[in-house]
Length: 329
Image 1: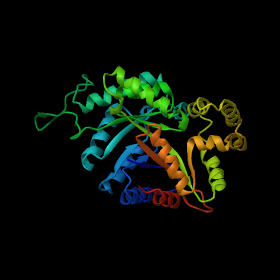
Image 2: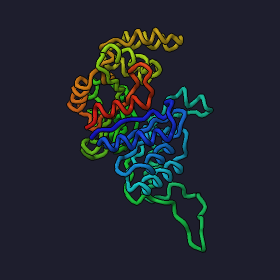
Image 3: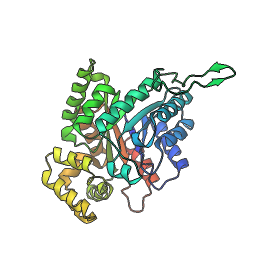
Image 4: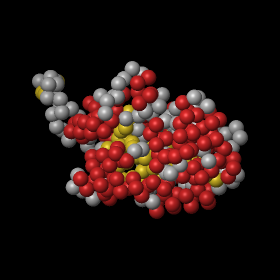
């Protein structure tokens, strides 16, 4: 199984996003993942599902602090039902700095995720999650909160080990991003530990990895573009800690310091070739396929390509199309 992610904040229209999803479907990809940053991932997924026939849409991830669990459950139910069960609800806490910037106050991430997932799953199962909600009637009949016709898988976005282990306990899958390849076996062990605590085998929980993918015959050009693509993310606390966990403590500290002072060139300088190879698929298609094989050997059930532009003047949409064709299953 293989998927690809669409950056919903990229300079591309929503109509083009749905066209790219259809193109991925034509090429044999199993899933399309949609980010949430300055956009509404669930709305984008609905548009994709309305214009495709086979591919599964995954919200990667819907930020829990931005939506009440009831609205999330109802939206997921709608998307699952209209698509014949082709929707996976990916949930996560997002980045604290971004959540606070819009006037919201995140609490304790692990506790918040456990409570949120419990509420959404309870609504899916027909439980009275909100017993004080007044009974609504239509033509004299009491109405119930809609439940999905087929089960909706819940996956969690995770970077750190504790959230990963929680996902192994309460979720159907883990959506990992910017986790070093060398650390994947350890994350798989965390998933298995959480699943064991819940009394189920770890194999019941998928491990997905979203990985920046820069396909180009010129490896050095791909590396330069990778530095540009990663500059914003690697200074964020969660992702920066992933760099440390890969054994690149000095690089992580230098990147974080540069991030805090707004030094973009300093961040790029900290992204060494060795570090890039821990977080990206880079270079000619053959080399990228070798790296994909390494991911699968490390326990990744679903590699998720995250295409980035590489060629001079290449648009985001063209980069996605070219990458999907180059690495089609």
